Amino acid sequence: MPRKNLIRTNKYYYHITTRSNHKHWFQLPLSEVWNISMQAFSIATNARTVEIVQFVLMSNHYHLLIKTPNCDIDKFMFWFNKTFSDNLRKKTGQINRMFSSNYKWSLITNEVYLTNVIRYIFQNPVRAGIVNKCEEYPYSTIFLNKSDLNLTFKIRFPLEINQCFYFYINETVKFKKNVSIKKGLRKTTYKEVYIRKNKVLSGASQK
Image (cartoon, rainbow, N blue to C red; front, side):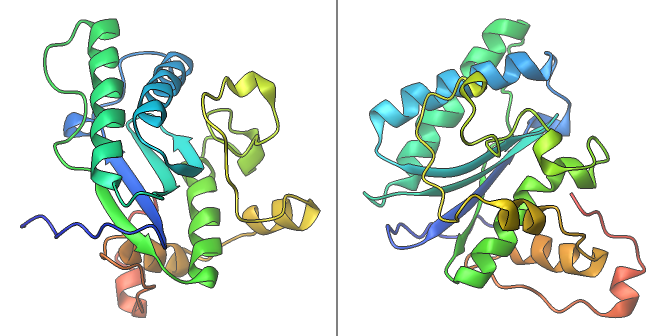
């Protein structure tokens, strides 16, 4: 499948995801991978000005929601993924690349879609069966005001953090809805996809 033409913009948010090479789990404790990702953010955000909204690290991939004031998502991602990958290789002693060759991106151009994507990202560990609530997962910027995250960047979150917010992100989402969001995030410009009942019953992955 050919790579889609990159849209450079400072108007909308990008959802970015990158998986480890061959989808293998990181060969380090996730706490160490988190610290390495923070180092990579420190270097990349010094090189390029961005607004980071969300970051959720999983065992073999991550989700990132980001805005680029200078329309340079490709340059930021080059710095971030290269630094992240290089430091992972040093820690593990591997010589092969750590991430698949291309990161996947989708522009979120609608406020309703944005809130759905934010919930979808935070719920990734819940869908994986790791935790029961989003805020129980330690490798996530849901802990927006906690100093023990060791964040090297400032979160620019577009939603008010209150009890309604936590209720919303922990709200049970139907399988069909999650499949629709996942398919929507494969598009250049995100749009939730209508899923027929027989497609839902086929057992598509929710992650």
